[in-house]
Image (cartoon, rainbow, N blue to C red; front, side):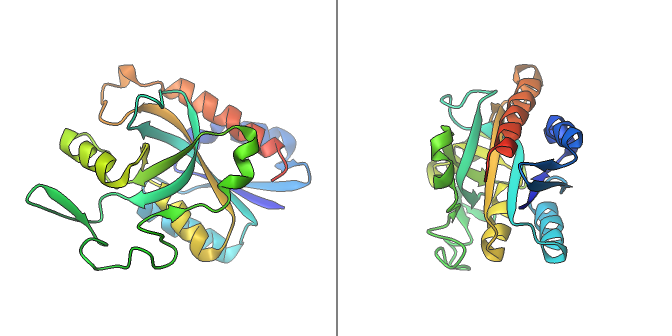
Length: 218
């Protein structure tokens, strides 16, 4: 099987790349390839789509760090994302954010969306490995304003925030390619003092999980 591993930055998956280099990018008859997309939804959508149209993989794994909205997901923990929403496509009126679905500019359940969500149908295959499944929200600007953070939590019931997750879900669902998204929590959303982040620990734990997935039969 041809499996594509993608990340926003090389740093996030550097230990995984080193592991694959030592195997010649082949494990258990699976052939692996790395794709670094750059940060954000726009870059991820373009680079990933270009790659798929040129050389479609049979499975895609997105691996990266994320912020947590809840104290139940502490920095350093690793999760698998079940569903994604886009958190900043719309307008704020009188202090209330309305997304493109609320504005009736798009159908909230038109494929690949289901009630605003981009749901991964492949997560059930990974239950036996003990992953914690979460809901993600993807934004173009990392949330620091308490009001915005409150709205994202209330409106989308999101557990984590990233800048690329929804792009992965959207492209893979449209192209009908099986995929998973794994994230390690580096910080709580809104915490900008990086002395309180666990970036090194989150990357280590993320790649430990990524390598275990590589070693499993997908």
